[in-house]
Amino acid sequence: MNSPSKRHLRRSQTVSTFGPGAIVDLRDESIMMVGLDWWPDQNPVEIHEPNLEKALGVSSFRTPTTVDISYNGKDLPFSFFPEWMVCPQCHRLAPLTFFRNALTSSNSVTKCPDCQKKVYPARLIVACPHGHIDDFPWVDWIRRGSSPCNCERPALMLVSAGRTATLADLIVKCKNKGCDGYRSLSGATRQENLKFMKCSGRRPWLLDKEICSENVVPLQRGASNVYFP
Image (cartoon, rainbow, N blue to C red; front, side, top):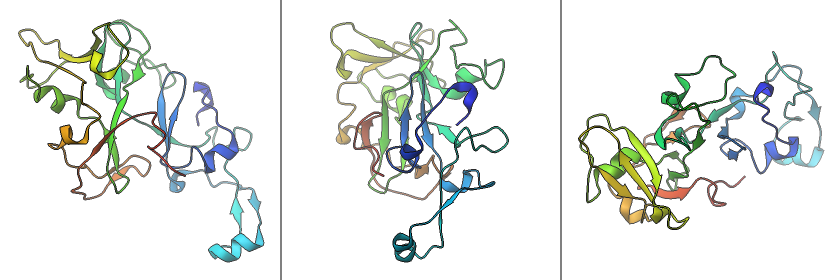
């Protein structure tokens, strides 16, 4: 991973707990390790284990690159996931591109363009039985509430009612002028409440999509059942 952003993993974690497809929760951001096709392969360090080589039909194994063994100053590649972010001050809820368009350099910390506070990743994601994974349908969620938002381009906020720390206490609102759309996140982790959404087939760790018609399962980003090595 890029050293200027101070993202660090132990080498053993990159082939187990945080292998390709795993969500890595860092202090201020959430990323996903991408597939081996994008890993640096310059001057690899090879290791041998005859029994495992025979079982898998390979001639050797390669150790993951580290900051000390890098390629053009870069370490293991990643993608940002989930892509929806929240500002802790103005509570703006928007895709990563909304916030990163305000960056002054590629190594800048992602901040809200309105209040200049560092943003953090949204808590909810969706996945399907085939392993596809995507962002939670925030816009569709608020459009299907008892007080729906019908704006063509919703400007979403994620605010807390201040009573408890549960999802039911969080409310998605649209701040567009004249729009009173809002919906609580109560029930957002129940699969039956996302029947309107079919799986997008997205595979962020491979930077592509597959055709898929499965129903999605809502999950919390840091849940232990999101990824298995």
